[in-house]
Length: 379
Ligand SMILES: C[S@@+](CC[C@H](N)C(=O)[O-])C[C@H]1O[C@@H](n2cnc3c(N)ncnc32)[C@H](O)[C@@H]1O
Image (cartoon, rainbow, N blue to C red; front, side, top):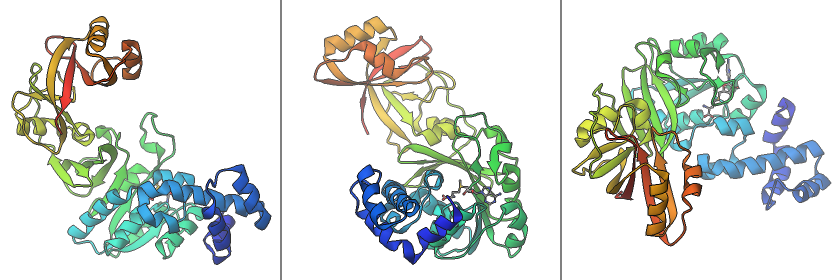
C-alpha cells in the first residue's frame, strides 16, 4: 500500500468513506465500487472497500476488535491469531518482563496482545505503510526502521525481545535461513542474554533451531500454527486455547500391532516429537516408526489426542474396501491416512460411497502390513 494512502486511511478524513464501505453488503462487488465512487476519489473508494472486506475476514483472528483495526491483505495473512498472541504475552509477564521490543511488528497483532497484558511495547516496522497502519492499531508510535539498525539501542534498557520474521518466499518452499526478514540468525541471536521469543512457521526444520534455544510447537483448535523459539531451555507442544502442554522427553514410542483403541495426537504433539512422551503416558505404541498414530488395549483420557475405538481391521485392499463400503451402505466416509501413499479424496471417490451410513476409516502401515481400520470416535 502507498504510504500516503495509509495516512489518509487512518485519518478522520477517511471515516465517512470507511463507514459507507462497511455499510455495503458486499464490499467486493462492482455495485459497491460504483456507489462509493459517487462520493469519493476512485483510489480512496477502493481503499475503503478493501478495508471493509479485510475487516470482515479479520473477525476470525481478532474478534470484534477487527471493526476498528486497519489491515493489508499480507498483514492480515501474517498476523498471529489473538489467542496465540495472548498466550505468548502471558509468558512474558510470567517471566517478569515489563517491556518488550517487537522487531517487525507488522499490523501489530502480537504488539496489541503484549500491550493488553500490561507490557510497555516498543514497535519497529520496516515497511512505511504497514508502520502507519500499525501505529493506528496500537494507538502509539511505531518506529519505521530496519530492525537490524535499531535493535541494539532499543534493547539496551533491558527490555525483552520479540520478532516474527517474514518469509520472503512463499510457503511450501525449501527452508533457507536467508529467506527471513529480519534475518533469522540476527533474530535468534537476540535471545542470548535476555528473555524473548522468535516466532517461526510450524514447519521450521528442527535442524535450524540453534543450540541452546528453546522451542514450543503450538496448535490452536487443532491447527498447527507456529514454532516459537524461546530464550529458555525447553521443548514442548502447547495446545491452545486451553494451554495444555506436554514436554518432549526424548522417550521413543515402541512399535506394535493394532490394538482396540487408536489415538490420533494433536499435530503439535507430532511435530514436536512429544509423541514418545504421550505414548508413555497412555501406555500405547505406534504401528510403525515415524507414524503419528498410537494404539492401546486400554483407553485413557487425554487432551493431547483424539481417541477412537477400532471396530474392524481390514487389509488395505481397494476391492475389499469398496465391497465393505457397499455392504455397510456407507454414504459418508471419512478417510484418514498416514504412512501410505494414497490421496484420501481420490480413494473416497473410487470407493463410491452411497447410502445413509457414516464411517471413518484409518489407513496405516502395521507390523502385519498395510491395514484399513474402521474406527468410532470416542472424544
Ligand atoms: C510476519 S510479519 C509480523 C506480524 C506480526 N507479528 C503480527 O502478528 O501482526 C513480519 C513483519 O516484519 C517486517 N520486516 C521485515 N524485515 C524487517 C526488518 N529488517 N526490520 C523491521 N521490520 C521488518 C515486515 O514488513 C512484516 O510486516
